[in-house]
Length: 225
Image (cartoon, rainbow, N blue to C red; front, side, top):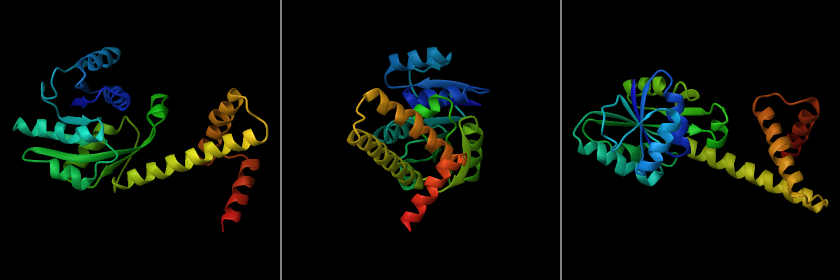
């Protein structure tokens, strides 16, 4: 499959690398030097323009404000394009308003963190409801990226916001509590957050907590009732 990934930032690089396995992937970015650098590191072709080559799919891994201009550029060609946006804050309604003529658009939103993904973690991707052909193409396109599900992609914004806010609230609480107890060494606090807290969260998510941690979870749930 011929794929054009638009955006050479962290997420664009991750997606391009994953999709390059078994596919012909080209990379475009408005910053041509950045595109050339990332494409070179992945041994992919860097495009001078987004529409330089035909593609079975175009993946937009760009900031929210760049989605509309990218789709408009594709519409101007008068050609057929299958466009997939991974921008968390672009709703189904917003994306539908951008589509025109032979340009078909679908949201595929990621429940994940770019840093974790770059270290090999497989995120959950929510393919939005839409045309069956576009959903099937998305399933083929993103299979190498993570775990796929078809549903209400617009919920991902809320999911990611809640997870981010609550994780940061917990991190700040750990830092504050340790400091109040006289533990102020920055390296020690970083270790508590990056090793202990992160490991416990991962174990909780994967249902792999030990007996001690399970007892703590039970007490927390009981106190929350």
